[in-house]
Image (cartoon, rainbow, N blue to C red; front, side):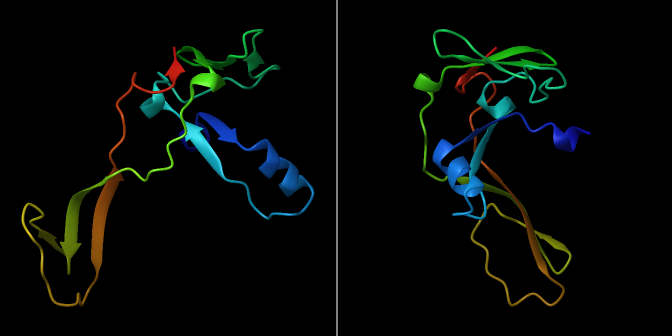
Length: 129
């Protein structure tokens, strides 16, 4: 069930309208979770309402570890792609040393890598708990 617990998402209202009217075939979303400051991305949406907008415009979402509060006026949209950290590279079933420049012939069995984006740590993001 963890794969279903993806946190809180932001989508464009225009994209939602365009999708509903058949002008576009997909919607771009941004997910917010533990890397954005939530203590848990598991939101308790089994009951109505699954979220609340307070008079000051903040959005409140119940999670299994307390309430997550988002102030839409304080969210900064960062369109820059984060730097990528290559954690390991495997060529023809052999782990390659990534601490120095890498050169190799075309792989016979395959090339794989484990990469992850460099993100902020919990507590540094736009979501308050």
